[in-house]
Length: 211
Image (tube, helix red, strand yellow):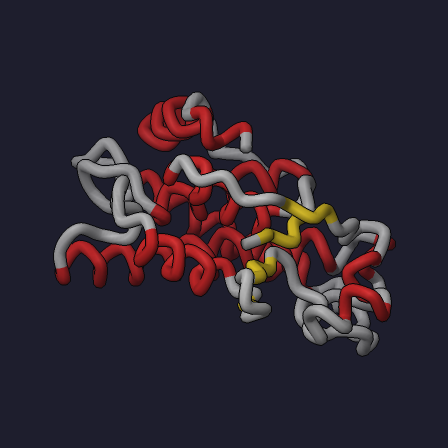
């Protein structure tokens, strides 16, 4: 296996954290998203969508969605379990992970991509080489959604150490990557959200957070 990666991008970081929590060693190929390397013919020949991360298996099979990569690795390496230990937990992790992804990661992407000059013509990931112009008005919508994201985090952590319960899961990985990502656009955990701040400090101290 090998992982096509980008050290500074939040979605590849989610995969790296998952891999690190599993204790797996997977060779990585660095691709520069900010410089547009993922949209060059060489990478588009590997992944026409231009997305990262992408996992390539030894037989040439490839998949580029973070959760597809994580589900595959969870099947191969079930311990530690990061996607839920029971049918109920797996459903809860799936639901909450999507909430963290939509209200955190995607909202952050709306704010970042629709105001960053290097993404003026590629405001939506997955467009391959097609130009998709930024929409400045989406910055405000993304900012509003992130406010809801932080409110939800504080509520989920009211009675548990981690977002989905008593165990660290993919929900926490997606959420911490979202929090760090939106720091790039000067958005941070609200001062009054003490539970979220404590959770963030604990999760950020895990070795996988440095992956």
